[in-house]
Length: 338
Image (cartoon, rainbow, N blue to C red; front, side):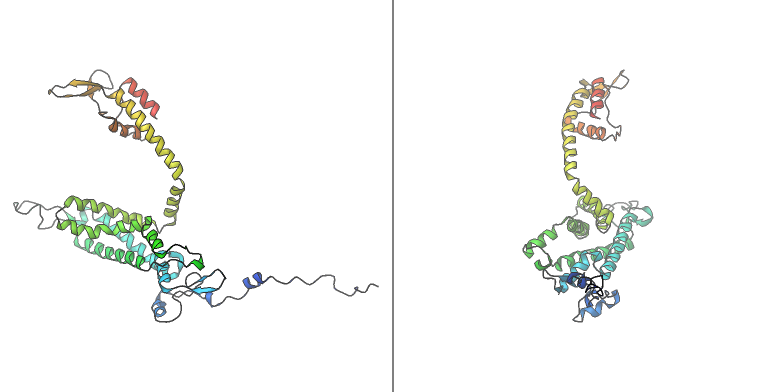
């Protein structure tokens, strides 16, 4: 009988690698649950991390050792990353609610039910009693909108004051702090936030210098509040990423439209300009045949730049119908431009 007859047929399993053993180890204190919104005040007065989670309060250095984030960095993440912690999610939920309220007020301010005519205004100063001032939004709407602008401004300033880039040993950039801050400040989303709050602070100054047209132009920038709301929507952000990836194709499309605009704009101008004719009132203008061909009319193609509008509307198959060819050669050009 062989000597190894009584030995087990199966060998012992190989030892578990250290990486797998570390993965199956029980969680440490870093994986403790994040604090609730009501416990945030106590965290500021203690020596414990502001957000005791592996995602926010700590980061893994190159050698794998956990390192606690700075308080400034933690607060910056709360202000800029909605999914960083429960507190960050709650903060962005409040900000989205405020933005929706601001957009709703901006819409209601244009409705007659939410407008009123003031008793005194510059337009009716020195006029008779029958003068009616231009309607303005009701006072409670402007008061709420003013408070919202204060909140937007404070959030914008606090976001820049708390800016703190990720350290190099955590995978951060090696550029100087000032360069990283400048890149953050000129980021498109930060510029949109600035354009959303700037009209509120500039409108009063332009009103004091009696520049009504400037005030009306500044009010148009309030539409950036809607774009500001979009940066917190994943679908909206995905849409902008798709546009960014599509820039080469869009550049090619714009180049084709530009060359087509110059070519077909020139051709339609020569075909539809008409003849220099004297009108019944003694003036002169270019006139072309009508669609029926039994009379003449003033030509809408008075210059090549004005013909560009016709080509864009035609090439994009929008076809408003405000400008169209009537001559045979003009119809040929229109057919080829489509």
